[in-house]
Length: 373
Figure (cartoon, rainbow, N blue to C red):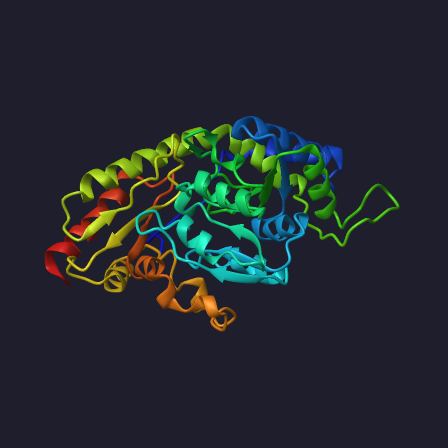
């Protein structure tokens, strides 16, 4: 296992730098409850991400649940079957009904035409995902929400630091939710955040993540404990000092993959969606019928040789038992999502992936292409 290469690996800054920040936490005696590091990280992220307001959370799933609660969403929520299951789990936890619609064939993001066709009087929200950090068609989706008076919440778990045509993709919709999980481009061990547009909404979200407290003796809402600890926030501040370098290293890996896989018949690298700044969070390829092995056979071929890609996202969310009974979970309704789930393989990408490991991964892909093993 020591020589195995996994799909991702968390970026860790120099330990001595983190020890210094831990010393400050020990000296202050403040471990949680929106202490000084929590406040510093919120301010630093607003500046780095160019967003007006941000509320830190202990993880992105709780942040999604709170985002739905903050907008008072009750009813049907149009979303994608092609995502990590937390996207739809947040809908179920909020006692809402997911309505799955198809994605675009190339981007694998929610298709605006499919969203528009699915709207009914019961539609309470739209919950798209910026899949692999590639922006969804935000202008079209926001326009649909605006025409119908339906809130749009973006699951931006993959989209830290991503800019679309008009600046930060996180400024679109009513709210955007980020993940700072250990596997993400920017991590705080575990963590998440909600980006909001007004001080009033940020204040309400901050109340919801702190049990609904409004001051010392008043509770105004059925809130939850979603606060990020001081240790996580301090780690995030340190990570922010290194994230540009981490993204730069990811970009170099992305470029080498594209260069060296271009001539392998049947392997297709996913393109971006025109973003002005990428974060290279994932490196998905499509394994087409012209490749000698199926996607699953290639996945097993690589695993048996110590390289562990992932089939993100397989199975589709709609295939899981808690979703199959919904009428919208019928796979005939979303052929593009079904195709993506059958063809996509995410290759290893992380800042510390060295040249020798990258050569090994590419070599395995070439061996598979040459031998049809």
